[in-house]
Image 1 (tube, rainbow, N blue to C red):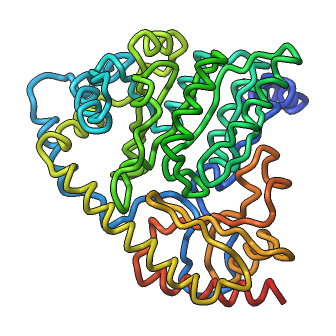
Image 2: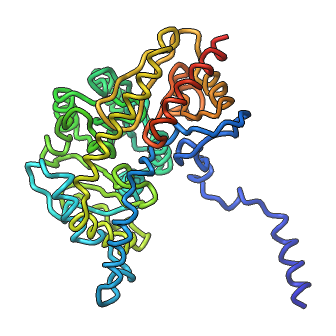
Image 3: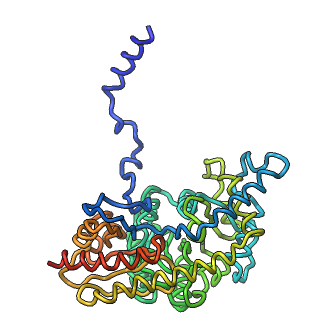
Length: 421
């Protein structure tokens, strides 16, 4: 009998298509590219050990494994079950307080735990803001190029995306105002401006103080909220960057998102939204995930207050400065015929603008054959995997050790020579 039922059920469902059940919003999406997920690309033809310059992943040797193990052991040794049951919609309050004290230490409004919602990394923080604010058809303006994963999140909430280019000072305000005027003339509402003003992914650019202040003024006059992604802002090389947009605006009109992914490890998946408490309250109703892990929250709190978190971040700054300089030196030795480099002041990325006649996809293919992986520039534009900027590439120097970065420069020289013919 059971076999007959199984056959009947199987035959009934075999005649049906998955596509007929998927929501209209989901049908407009893809599962995301490897770049969106921070992963590598196709397999190389070379037998050489692969070198990944693709994802913004912290150096493995910097990850404080022993201290995290000690922290989680202390948490689990505490009496009661608080670490192993649900933790509520905003997340562990002492961790939120500690995040405020460290990551918003220069904030004139002195945020406390009420300014924070803990999330599944910065990506989850962006999703939380979009879930609460974006109606299908709302316009979101994003600087371009930008992180493809964030663009995918915005699309997934039904936003109409408009890209605005950047110059050396940050997002171009003349083009931003023109985009606002165009949307208004068409009767469309612009809800958000998405920006990474500090050590931007993929370009490594840092917006000037004046550009930040002018952006805040423009957004306030036009009644548009700002979504500020500062995942990399602690990783500065030559001194702190300009104040965050939230600091300059005392939090008014700005959602700032941050994460432990870049200062400890991506696998932690703990990030946050920072905003004034009345805006944090507005983010809670559309949250349906039962909150994040209280165990991880308590472990991170233990590490921040009883470990060497501050010293750890300082060591990371010194290491990534050395890594950036190592790769810059190697690329500069051969790069003049091929590209110009944006020299970052912090973060994880180099942005190479290719000279006329060179194509990022061709360079990528040649580099993969040398077992080196990076992101072609057109992956970071609104048109998706093709059609953005074929004459740029993004290189992440954060993950490989110094010796591998030196070898990567040698392989990339061969790849450029091959692609250039």
